Image (cartoon, rainbow over all chains, first blue to last red; front, side, top):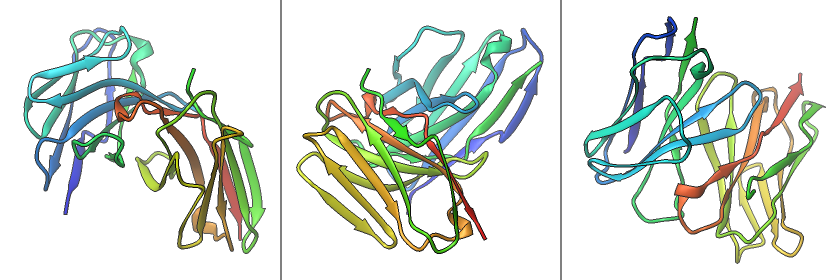
Length: 113
Length: 112
């Protein structure tokens, strides 16, 4: 069966420090991968999606970047964190065909202080 | 915006009662999905209903879709305290989840 792992679960980082959140999917190949952010009391905002290795699309301009170095690995990064980057970050995957169910990881709480 | 809007924002009921949450959207859809999120956790997929479907069931869950009214409802029957969570609808408008947009959710509290 397929599983998705996301880490770290919680992170407290000072302003200006770098960020790296990692996500891996097991039990499938060539998934579509997603990074979402959820602000307190809000819905989910799509940040990045990827349909293949090295293919990244960004939905909103921001202080973050994403990379997909391997088929089942998706990384969210920042060179210098801002206070506004605080939030709950969720990685998700779906099997490649469009319109399928998306499966989410457990999320990473980021607090920028 | 294609974002789904859930209604109500919060709902508090007693165990054993039914809970109904609604989602409205603005334009045509490919499918509509309902998710559940326990506090501080990831989202769990509940039901996907396609634009040519009107009703789907899964255990105690029943989802309806009325494309003429651009609305969907999620019914949880015989609720349990463990159903306490936020429930989100998500709109797939282009056949691709690249553009899956989520509402702000309904916070359901089931009191024992």
